[in-house]
Amino acid sequence: MAAIKPLPELLINQIAAGEVVERPASALKEILENSIDASATRVDIQLLQGGIKQMRITDNGAGIAKDELISALTRHSTSKISSLDDLHKITSLGFRGEALASISAISNLILTSQTDDQNHAWQVQASCGSVTQPRPAALSKGTVVEAHDFYANIPARRKFLKTDTTEYTHCEDVLKRMALVQPDVEFTLEHNGKLRHHYSITDISQRIEAVLGEDFIQSVACINEQAADIRLHGVVALPAYSRASRDTQYFFVNHRFIRDRLIAHAIREAYRDVLHLDRYPAFVLFLEMNPSEVDVNVHPAKSEIKFRDPRALHQFIFHAVHKSLARPSKEMHPELVTNAGSESIPHYPGRPPKKYGVEQPTELYQSLFDIEDAYPNTMAATDTGAQANRRSDVLIADNALAENMPDFPPLGFALGQLHGVYILAQNNNGLVVVDMHAAHERILYEKLKAAMDSQSWSTQALLIPVTFHADRSDVVFAEENLMLFEQIGFELAILGPTTLAVRSVPAILQQADIVKLTQDILREIREYGSDRVLAAGRNEILATMSCHTAIRANRTLTIAEMNALLREMEATDRADQCNHGRPTWYEISMAGLDKLFMRGK
Picture 1: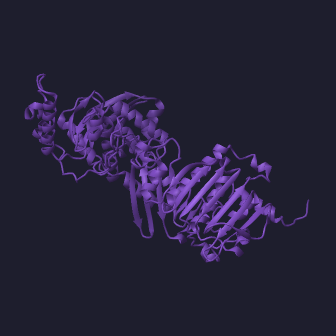
Picture 2 (picture 1 turned 120 degrees about the vertical axis):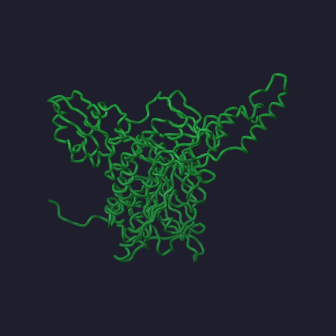
Picture 3 (picture 1 turned 135 degrees about the vertical axis):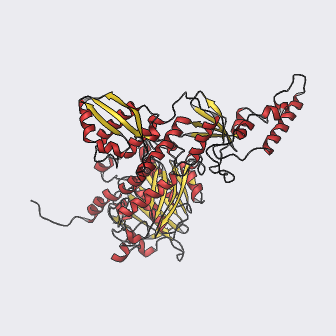
């Protein structure tokens, strides 16, 4: 066996670089963090071949003094911390003092910097472990870090790098994360001489829109919750904006982008009732907390952290996101942009809605259809009238309608049904289209959850018990879990080796297909296990119960029934989405309809 001896400094740095600088994007992240810690307000990034060939980052930060340039390229040299106490309350993004040393170990690095008290800039170069002495250079205030040929001196590692396009995409992701959390810093990104991104200094809302697009910012709910010294703020996308991957999930702790299973689980649980299992939520969230309550010194890449009280934090994040998604329709409106390019409608009504009961006077609904009697000119334009006169009549009628327009509730008043599937309603903004089955399913689901939580099931005994054939294994399983069925409002009886009977059901479900509903619930209880059914599997079973009972397609509703459904939607949490995450209603503004029909042209 070979003798034990210390490793050469260069090899130590190259080993460390494998953890800190996995790819060019890792180097970019470390350098950007140093720029932010140096109070830079502008950072310019230039990449060649995805950053593999060359990476140049220029900032206007505080700079590095001449006599500290060589130290900056030495491992574990930093200005961020100086004692163990500092390590327990880190407020800077960088603190380990490894980044520049690791980058210089696997590339040819040039470091140029100037501070306020220096007459000119100074520059050092590092390659294969050797560092030149500082020499004068031309540069205004700030720092330039330039790295060439990543892993050129480690061919075995370089072959693991991906294509230029892939490496550039990773660098772009790093910029997006930094831009989201630093709206007070201007960023530019050039790739192969072409400007790809320019983020100007702005507020957080406009920065989110600039990074993630208008569609995202128009489909979000805001969060701003605080408990003791913990604050969570940002935006979460409505379930209709769900994604096929986690590519739009940004979570920051004290301005640091992190990935954490605990946080991911809390957010996922908050979406459980409104998001299909194979879809992922989108969000940009910022958690601010006492630095002493979090340990960021877990991994050299600093993307993993540990919390002092993870259980309390999990509950805080879960309830904050859950509360935001639970706002009823009257507080949070999804938007629809039609193919005609309609103008976007506001998330919130222009004025607070009045209080409406479940049932409205029939006269009010009838008045919505009496336009012909009130304004005959709009319906009786004759062939002999001039086109200008006809337009005048329409405008007069429009003005009269506007003056007498009732103050509609958020989802408006029903006009009728479309093919027995959709309810068409009119509100202050325009036309509202409601998927009546999806909406009723959400209403029933929330009622079932509330009833189970309060243990206030109202059961309905069946005049004639419903019997049906079942497999022997199902009958045995049902007999072993009769108490469990009672907990969700069902009374079952065993009539034979292959026969089950249902004697009572929750009152709210008495119109459902009892046999099919019972079979589905039995299957789900077996799937989730009797010991977990009232925990993890509870909501899935309640969702099945509500789906079986909700209004089916092709069922004709009266105007009063439609309006009663609309009023219940406005009073129900999470009524904007069904139990599977699909939207329950859309609104098309009058401006959008006008463009469709080319009015005013």
